Image 1 (cartoon, rainbow, N blue to C red):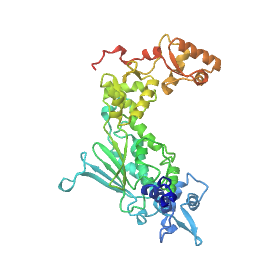
Image 2: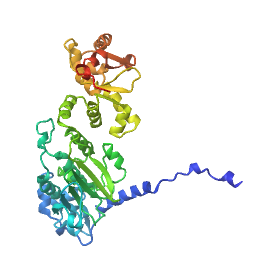
Image 3: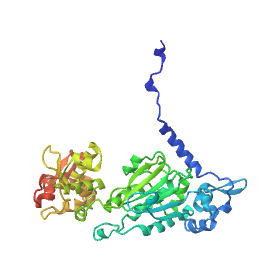
Image 4: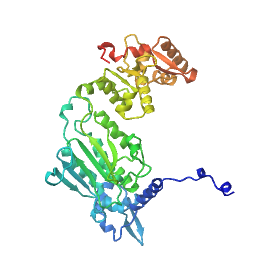
Length: 443
């Protein structure tokens, strides 16, 4: 009888403790920067610094009104009182309110940290200033330690330095803006070794941000310290649009470097690691230049480089192992490479893929199709709307052109009528076959 009236266990939803604690922690962090430190007054705020930095942003506002606009000060008992965020950003002595709110920079000799008699610190600096100027001071102090990569000088890299400028500076900005300021015993740290740079920020990523999402290059727009972030964005240190992390990956890809790695160390420190050694040798970098305008991801480019060193061929298992992804992720990426004309199956049912150069115009290719090649390279396919938009023709004309190119095997089709999508056909793909003018490599 008792069992008949008990609610089934499946009807009770129990959330893990960390899923309950994360929102509470994020809420507490938002309240921390809005708190009013005991004994703080407007005399502790450097109003000249406020005028210098916020004056160009709000020329018609007084220094106090500008602070009030950002919610950095509030009226209490008939007088203005600064928040912790105001004291960190514009305080005359920020360390009075947070003893470790600066940045510690350490340059280590070699590729590992040593202690005792083998202590290998080459340079150590403690950079302390209001956050409104701290980031700029840190950039200027660290910049001389970023070496030039002379051996890549003549390649297509945007940066000639061992770390792309945007990447290491963005990592420092994020470390300052998003750190957990309730942890007062640890500073933001920048550790530089011969082969890498580590930017360390106290505190775990604020929910709903996760390490896995960051390493997947997802665009995340969430601030642990919204008052600090909004002010730093208006001071042009950051854009507050969630685009910084994806761009860090893109810049490292473009420079031929390993992607940034995000992790938690020591249980409470968020770390970004940047490696300065290039993934590719000089010849491979030159060869990858042919694929610049195809719209490939960094992982897909790494697979092309791997294939080039292994007979211009690769398998799905190779993709999974080299890129460290699962089967479905590899399958989708390979299908995208096929659609974009940089890989093809070596035969019906084969799981071996051949690398081929991007689609190029041929002497006998229709002129209108040549005009559409950039669209095919970018999207891997064509639709009737693409033809209408690019060529400026009517829908019936676009349909006629697509039918002609389908019949002559420049294109192939999936779907029918208005659901039809057109992909590079045999004639278009074979002309781009990378291995066609090269000796066949040993398997």
